Image (cartoon, rainbow, N blue to C red; front, side, top):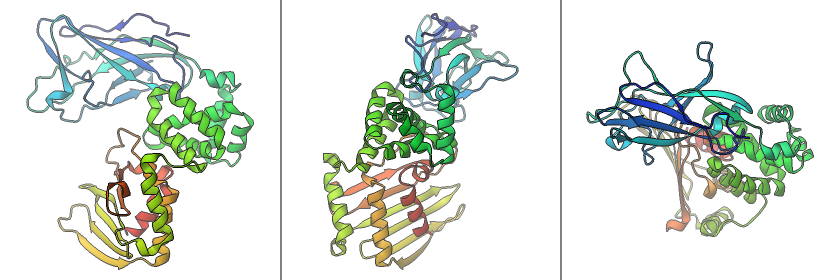
Length: 402
């Protein structure tokens, strides 16, 4: 199965500049990696500076659904309200061409199979230091032509007999927390595990979109060895979701009792010791910063090995922070350490590149003993903390930080 169009879909030329979309070379499937090439040509007589074509500079995409007056999907760069430095731009000389790849995997995962007309629009991007970035002429949007992309259902699910109706039913069961979802996945055999593994890719979406991904990760853990095999297999099939699926494979292996990777063994061994032996907690230090921004204010929790707790808080708009000291009971200390163990804190890492507007990014540092092997530092988006496998740990630390 291939895209309907095999040539570049060019748009109108504006001030010597035109944009075009080129379809994927191979088969495009829902839930798989869907990358469309964006091409820009400078057919004018002067060089232009463009945003979004610099491979070393991060950028994000906005994918807008079809509307009554625009019956196609519109893709654009969503970084238009940020001042970008010189390294964010490429200079396109007259007669030259720039290309980049647009990863639309998650957009088409949600839309599923079908024929999807789409276009790209280049919007003005703000530049710092007076950089003369190219701006489309007013009243004439700089857009590519309309590309019609044919997206099929996932081969692995199709071969397992999972049709679109079954996919929709499984999605609804996972999202609602239906207790029968695991039994339904198990009844589908390898196909059920493959379905859950593919849905784990949604972790990389923002906001409510990621909920299904976290529920699917929990399902993989409960499926056991078939879930682990499916996660490892999906890593190769879904390169756009490599980070999420690698994390899923490590989480499932942990839940199955597999030994930790060699690089984490000193930390895990020491954590087990401080849980069992309160007398060796002299160098223990836990630091949790759930908030630190002008909008939300700041809050920081520090817990020492002897149970001392220090909470520092600064309300939004305040210039001075307040500090409160107290002491955790032995039972509270034990619960905190066991929560670190249950969350497999040594495996935690950020998965999403971007957060929602003004989304906090709580940071955790755990020092079990002297030396780098016994220390872990991690900052995750708030949604990753509270929807992922560390949700109980994050909730506990939030309560201790009040």
